[in-house]
Image (cartoon, rainbow, N blue to C red; front, side):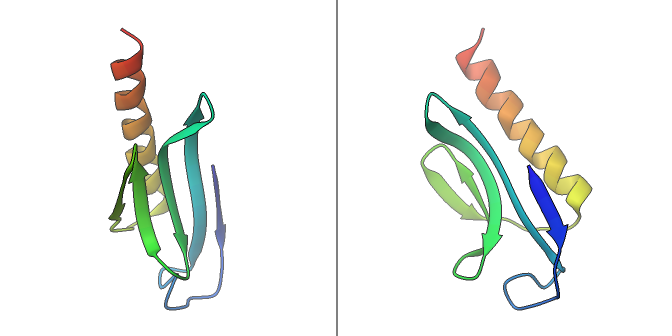
Amino acid sequence: MKAYDVPKTTSAPHGFKYSLVYIRGGNRLVGYNNHKRKGDHRHYRSDTTPYAFTTVDRLIEDFLRDVGTIREEREP
């Protein structure tokens, strides 16, 4: 997980640049990030969807929730 302050831009209107990723067996299973081409978005398995960023704390909560769901599915 990494998140840091940046100047506000169209790709980071909230003033944060972030990348959170959960990789298992060489495969990204969960990821949250923002970059110029896609802005705020979420990777969940093979799906990529927009993400409505509100706060860094909420971002971490959402990421950890998704990681927990993936882990429960794979580890009984």
